[in-house]
Image 1 (cartoon, one colour):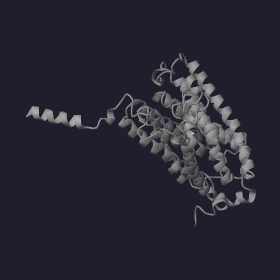
Image 2 (cartoon, helix red, strand yellow):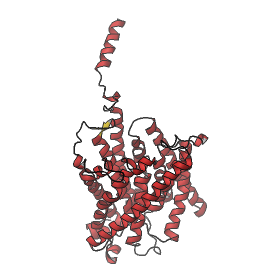
Image 3 (cartoon, rainbow, N blue to C red):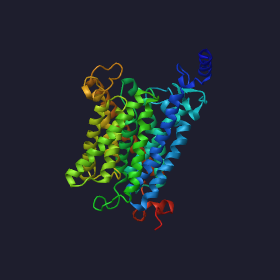
Image 4 (cartoon, helix red, strand yellow):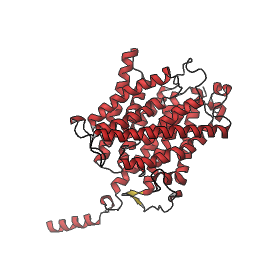
Length: 433
């Protein structure tokens, strides 16, 4: 009886599919399933997460314009990523840019692997990052740029800025060779998007009435709903960047959550102390700051480091927002630079600090290969920050000027801005009440 049972179990085990346990260049089913899930989560961050978050923050006459811009950017970037963007970012090329060997997914069939997952899935996962980055930028010029200008700018910016910087950091380029730490996009996504938003806000100019006229969010319920989707989606953003269903992904998700919670509470506490009340808008903004700041460090730091990073994000990004708006009087409409740009810079720096293994409960998991000290890692992080900021700022300015020539001006006229972009650009209204 026991012998028969043993033979039966052996037969069943030998008959089971082995793809889930495959290694050494074979497809790994567990990792593939996790990245499939993560890809959906990252797309959820833009559609509908960011669309709702941004949509609720603008005035009601412009809500549809934000939703339309997010959906359109998602579509344009997807096509450009297929045609040439992925190749420029992730083919071999040189230290600064990829080549054209993977244009239109040339040579990448369903059985071709990237590591132990299908390369088609890796391409799609990276596409969702490419989608959210220019979508973040629209917060810098919200409520005043022509729809045609938004589309042209987003497409050109993807190819001229995002693809090269992605190659530098994740595609084997010069920053990768130096040992820069950017686990999930502090440099690639947040510094590039934040810098571009700042430049765009300055080139396009402030909204009519800024800073005298209050421009309050029209629907915070919508924004909080979108913020919740961002928080959940960020698990795929950071956890998926491990490209495996393993301890790296688990730790990345844990530290992401801790930093988001710390950023939320810190921002709310500052407002409570300064103004006597903690606002809902402040809480969700602090959450986004915590998420953006942990992003580059999420695969390299432990929970203790994440707690400090989240607290730092809430504090630094709050005062950066005040300084940009009230002191410099730059109308970065939805605070993209002080939250994402400053958060990305802060997190990229702190990744070099809290990755150290000698900080007790605040220790991380070590420096990059060939780097022996914290000062060396921080120096590499600084090079990544400064080079990305400078390149993004210069190229964004050039692209905006080129688009302005092509569209006969970047922004709608004064009367159109007063009437709102929903009617002017789309002949629709978000609310028929």
